[in-house]
Image (tube, rainbow, N blue to C red; front, side):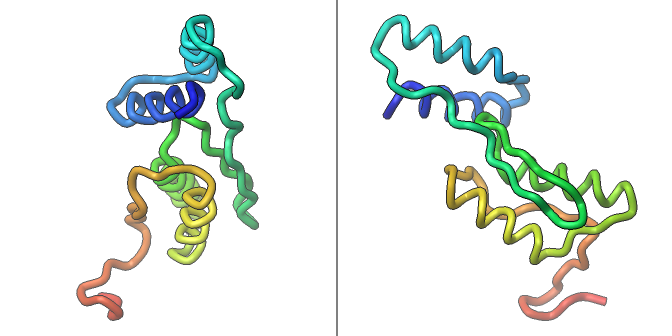
Length: 122
C-alpha cells in the first residue's frame, strides 16, 4: 500500500468517526510520512459527477461516497428537489467503481419505503 492510499483510508475512517479532515490536514499527514519514506503519489483527486438537473457532486479522498451521496440528496430534498433511487444507485456505482466504499447503501427518507422486496409500501 502506498502512503497516499493509507492516508486517504485513515482520513475516511477518521471522518466516519466524527473528526474533521480537510485537504490541508490530509496533505500534512502525507508530508509527514513522505519525509520518512519515499512517496511517489499524491492524494487522489476528488471524484466528481454532474447530476442533471441538480448540479455537481464531489467526493473528497477522505469522504465515504455514501455519506456524500446522502448529504447531496438531502440538500436537494430540503430545496424541494428529489433524487430518484436510480440516480442515487448510479452515483454509488460510479463512485465505488473508482474508490473503495465502506458501505454500499444510502439512506433516502424522501423515497417510499419497501415493506416487501419488489413491492412499494403505499
